[in-house]
Image: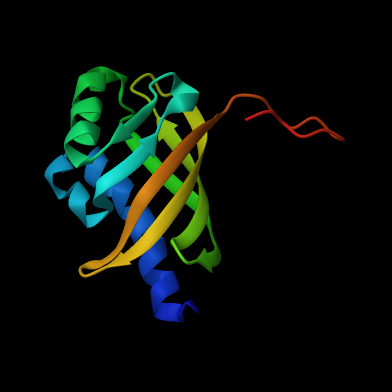
Length: 139
């Protein structure tokens, strides 16, 4: 499927909306970002894959004070679309209560639904090691 400029803008705003909703505690609005059966892969954080909006909200609430106080997303790249949706990559920065910061890469599958674009699958990978010239940094 060919993406229009409007599609690209809508997908970019969709990815950005996630941080606004979770930072404001508006978890009841996550259906504006994710499909009801979303697969949210947190394997890189030893939490496995969370499936469905109720489980995602529950996991967010269970993390409690371990949640970042701010989620920032940047460097959104919309890749080729496939039959199953559009693949995107973006970078995320999480700011913690002590002021420390962590970096992740989001790999999303975004699908068009009757209510607009939604993320059906998200893989979150932590960046823990800086780039070493001549090598590929581990994820």
